[in-house]
Image 1 (tube, rainbow, N blue to C red):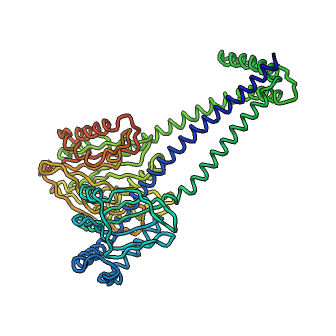
Image 2 (cartoon, rainbow, N blue to C red):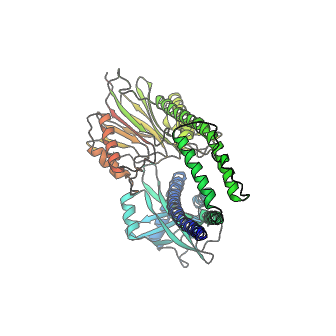
Length: 562
């Protein structure tokens, strides 16, 4: 009877261990696949979209305008380019075309993209017209396009361009490369002239397999190792499940219960429960007994260690809280900020995604008649972004006060931030000076969001050409723009944490919702405007986790008295 019971126990242990192992492997493998697929897709979409925006921001608008004018003129005279139509060939010898091709190739190399092209969007005739096409990245392309080449525009692409104006929809497509099919992610962004008008679109394509061909083998290798470890454990447990295991296990179980009761009652004594069993089987059971005895001894030591670790964790939490308070104290948070200046109506709000963040705002008096405004967003989150934010904030404030020019201030800060930027961090900045006497706003934009303006009874976006983000390239010159405010006009600037706020369905808040939120908000004060927008964001996001820092600044212009 004992033999039958031991065989039954042995069989149950083996079968149960195998069943649990298979279930765990299926669950872990499935979760890894889902998380990996979702994460890599989101990563590629963000990468290609950022690549398109960056590429369009560094294009020479004059060269692009020249190519666009020449191609439009030639295509109207001779039609699309073909093997028989050589009317476009002269463009390939022009300085503008050569400079554009060289720039596209540098962009393609820097971004490791498969294709980088410059096209016109002819929505009237449902087609895209090529201006320039960089060489294929790392392989011989099946097709290289030249000025005047055209390809058909889909109805969805046409509608997207008409609705969004400044971008081409991000999508994936299959491409035949050296007798094999590869998956490409594609996105496009507009090249603007000095008046903010769309000239053409830069389209960037990247191959998904550039990273996945390295990740999949590692993922498979990890799963194989996990399977091996689990089945090895099943084998060991099965070996121990024999007739010589039952009685020692009962002894160990009894000792374990006594030990647990001791710990529950918080009794500390020198009794060694497992060593006192005196198990001498000269096999794995004896080793288990010794291990349990050692574990008993280690648990006492680990208990003290856990107490120490808990104290360390509490210290880190306290330090992070202190860091957040320090960062918060560097921002102007007292409203109204200039109580003696009743004509200055301004309010700001920031909510980091973590204990500390990379967003920041600032406003300060440059002199008695000029007010400086800043809204910025540092790449990344956490302590590194917070440190970079502190440096950028100080440099921007000092540079603006010394130059009295937003563009020149950004030039100076960009050069300083590029020095020893080993972590390759960058920051987007919207920087402005308001003349409190006239309402004239002079501003510059380094890759930041488009602000909103309330004028003549309605809200609208201020659309101007953006400069490159700070600390990306050292030799960048930034442009200034002006805006005339009238009595009672509003300016609203924010970080990308607002349009990119997502709900549980991964739907973004977006620019249109933000515009509608401004229209519906309580405009009795700058503070009530921000609260109304924040309430709309919270209601939209719901219980979804906040992904990025949220920063807002509202300013209402009142002419300086006297």
